[in-house]
Length: 312
Image (cartoon, rainbow, N blue to C red; front, side, top):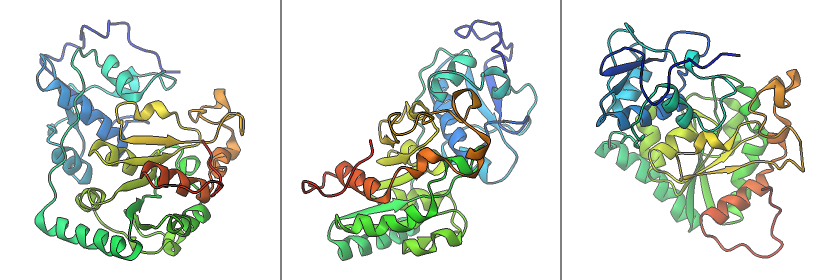
């Protein structure tokens, strides 16, 4: 287990002057996923008015553009940067935002960063898609974001057959759904309209037009909540505290009564096994019928008594 440093978290002793640079590149777990960058952007945004400001270091490319679109400073060099994985224990209790802010020794309050407004062209494109679904289904437009990357990727996925069934279940409540993914994946081609091979600016534009996003413990789920979109996050082994700073995100999981290893944190100490690398049993217990019902509830749609079953 990685150990916490000996210095007091409320009085930065990293001796880096008035700026701390988080290095998202170096090490076996550099917290370099897009969800991680969203969390880190909350910290750096909150530090702008404090005595110690926080910046970032990532290699040139999409992740650098991502942070800059949130208005965050990205350094050109990793010199004198800090590595979060050396400061935070993998078994750190509580939410990631709280743990990172404490580990960096900051007194500042994290603040939601603002993502760049969508261009007129992208807004028109996204509005056209959303309006076409609302006209067809006479109700709400929901975005499905089934892809996840990074550590324990397969264990954080919801089975593809559930994703493919979900649009039909949503239609029972007059909800139209499109699927939004970064790269084409044949597993989701039967979900209806699929928007793929687009960047985060496209994600932002379309998410801003949706009434609800259904995602996972993923970069897309964290991004949706960060830009203020109502989100339903489907989780198995993950801990809901990862979204502690995002009131827009509602977590849906199986219960401990259904399966004891739920919320294992992907830790073998709490029930994660080698078999979980092939899929999460707790995720499999979330049916498309139950997810559609929960989505309808979040959208304020009246549900007839006895219509479907719900997993809490």
